[in-house]
Length: 71
Image: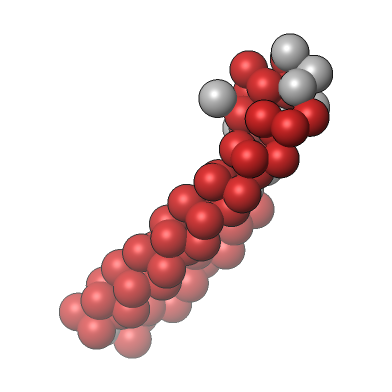
């Protein structure tokens, strides 16, 4: 919906959808944090170091999808 609102240049709908997506982004972030913590409890110290590398790579990939591009 946000993408369609931007394409339609509907500023009112964009504002509404940005609020909705911001809430969803925060919910997803909290889920990721919780999952990462659960995973870490199961890993050995060496596995945790590798997991740290994966998390860093995952953060670097943020914004590489179409969702971060202007439409």
